[in-house]
Image (tube, rainbow, N blue to C red):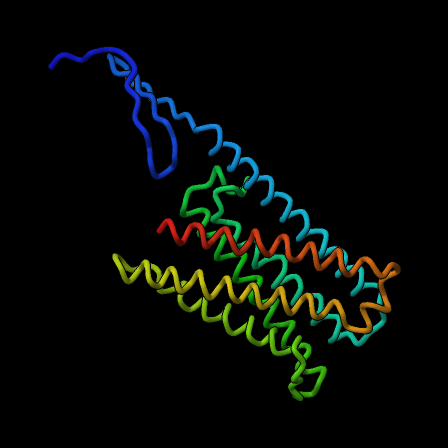
Length: 241
C-alpha cells in the first residue's frame, strides 16, 4: 500500500480541536484549538484560579476572626473547623477533577482521584468535628435557625455524596447513574454549605467584630463567585459523561 506524504486535516468534535496529521514515514499530529475555544478555556482557567484565591482569602479572614474574637472555645472550634472543611477542603477536592485546575493538569486520572478522596475525607472529618463541637456547646439542644438547618442539610447531602461515590466503580449505565447522583448530591451539599456560611456572616458577633461594615458584603460576593465556579466544574464533567 502506497503512503502519500502530506498533511491531512480532521476535526475532533468532542474537544472542538482541529487535528492536523502528517502522513508519511513519520506520523506527526498537530492539535490546534479554534481561537474561540481557546479563549473560553483561558477565561475558565482564570476564573478557577480567581475562585481558589477568593477561597483562601475568605478562610484567612475567618481564621483571624476565630483568633481575635473572644468567644467560647467550642464555638470557635465549630466556626474554624466547619469553615475549613466546607469552604476550603471540600471545594478544593471538587476542583481536583477540573480540566482548568492548574495543579492537577499534569496528574493522571488515578492521581486526581486520590487527591479528591484525600481532600474530601479530611474536609468531612473537619465538618464532623466542628458539628460535634457546637452540639457539645449547646448541650445537645438542637437549634432551629436557618443557619443550623442549612448546615444539617449540607452535612447530610455531602455524606450521601460520599456513599454514592463509593459505588462508582461499576460498569456501564449503573456507573454513570451513580456518578451523576454523586455529583448532584455533592453540588447541592456544597451549595447548602455556602448558604450556611453566608448566613453565619450576618450573626451579631461577626458584625460587631469587623472594623468596616462593608467587609461582610464583600465576603458574600467572594462566596458567590467561588461557589459558582465549584458548582459548574463537576456538572460540566458529569454532562460529558
